[in-house]
Image 1 (spheres, rainbow, N blue to C red):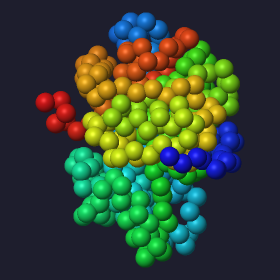
Image 2 (cartoon, helix red, strand yellow; image 1 turned 90 degrees about the horizontal axis):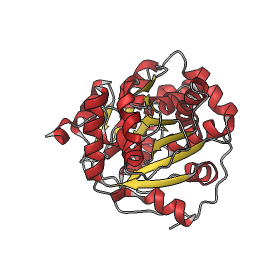
Image 3 (cartoon, rainbow, N blue to C red; image 1 turned 180 degrees about the vertical axis):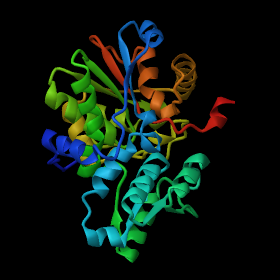
Length: 319
């Protein structure tokens, strides 16, 4: 365990600036109502469909927000990122759009479809010998050698501000929302969404949801200190992080109502059921919020927005 000793300087103005910066580049994703989901949950539910975002997840928001702030010299030198999948694709597509050379360090056990998509966007992918525990170190070694800029997946104020535009869109579009439920991996999406939503509407409850096998965030939230775990074995590959980022945790402690977890069996059942009912392609990490809602782990006071963080599904899970 380690105690965070960092104070984040990000605020609502940074998130609004990110929204303006990103406007020409990303999709304003829909906030879709679903009668069947609302009936099952016993409360009005709308899905914030980041599975319909460019590159298939919310990650391009933070990635592009960081890339767009690089100067010309940094862009020429290129960027390096480390990710199990969705951040990899977000950085790769963002770099392609801006003409920036990109190298992505991905663990050897990353979902193959995500690796192929990252390469298809034109990035160089480094995997040999890389694990979830070593990807950060490998990426920073490459960056130091090449003089490239590192674009981290979550522990960065530019990433948090970009991800926070999800929360900003929700509260601006749906004034009646009382509760927002968000998947939690490293904490970029949860911290950004919570900061945006509660800055506009302090009474909103924001919840984070993790897979039970990788509940470092839940443990951290309960103890008040960042807990680091071994690489978790879970179908929610977007939440296979070892610890929450320090910037992220500083915001989560202050702005989030609770962090809960759900097991993989329920998560897979929820993902399949939600896809059948909504006709949306949802990856397991993207279904974390719905699973927690259906399991009663989250008790909304009224209308609830559930962030579907991504749709880059490994289809073998459906077999």
